Image: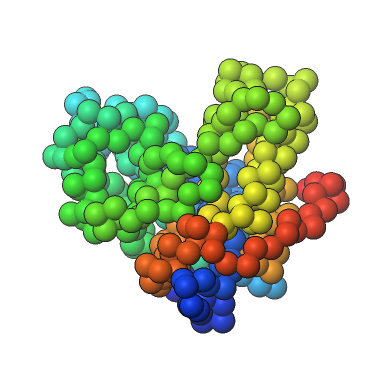
Length: 339
């Protein structure tokens, strides 16, 4: 599916530039992405969830930042030799049995056919904060080889660094390899993305944890640590789920009624907090992705949208120089019961 096609109709109808750089209201873009992407039950669950959401319309598309070791079975692990590591080393598990790898590949291919995006999370999930450009280049070459090996022909346009750990050498390699975007940094919640040296920067954002004075990054592991120092707490999981929902809705309402900066949410396939956070994410997606002025898109679709904007229009968006909307009516409790 071409992301440009998905958004072009909306753009044609609603992005006419008028005097004094004032523009029509943009859609509220929501980018939901997943890191590592190991567990087969999550691939199955998200495939089914997206199919259900899109049954009678294109409502949600996800980005999957897949770690390359997911495409290598345990018995094949020595095929990978990461920078400064021994052959067969990685910071996360390899792909399991060869049958597990094949199932994972089939899910990735199916989701790509349905308009979702497969992006890079490097191979071995190492911290590359001190890597040279040559070391990053070797890691990306290894990633390409793994995709080719399992028959995944989806073009990889974007990257998120493990641990959000980057180095100057990374951006030289991303530019050389014509990546469209990087999602490895952080920003304020109401910031529109910047294009730096030809690469869009799609950043996770700092949020205020609903009902508390704590700050948390818009990623599930950070909620996990803020709530219980990354230790499952079964007695509080419903509370944690609801607090994540309300935090995401606070973020959404503020941007939706403000300057419409894109929403950035990152999750993992891991079943943190007994599944409370993945439940929260699905409740959130059900609540917002069907709204008329909302587009839940892959990061490549977001890049398509931004590429079509002239500088004056993007500047007007940054200022919020367009007619604002009030907060949408969200019946989250009813949607939660249907989960």
